Length: 77
Image (cartoon, rainbow, N blue to C red; front, side, top):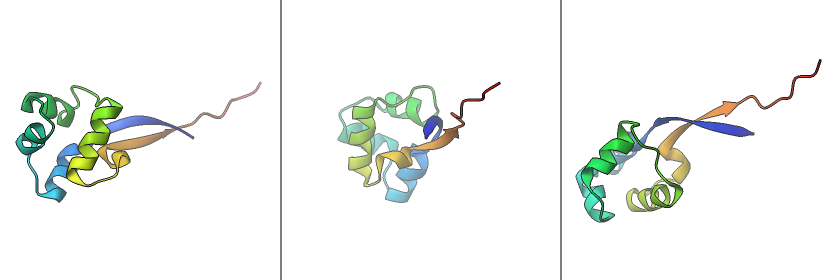
């Protein structure tokens, strides 16, 4: 099954972990603005960064975005 990325769930995962966006940025040596861009859906997290974020806050990488199934069924005539 194919998926499309929906809304970023990073803010929810941060709240669950008790961490802040500023803490995450410092932990991953990145600017807080970049983390906020992910949270606000202004940027999509590259896979390497998503894996690091998931590891830092203790969640599964798939929990960082809503995953919307795409109907990939081929319609015939």
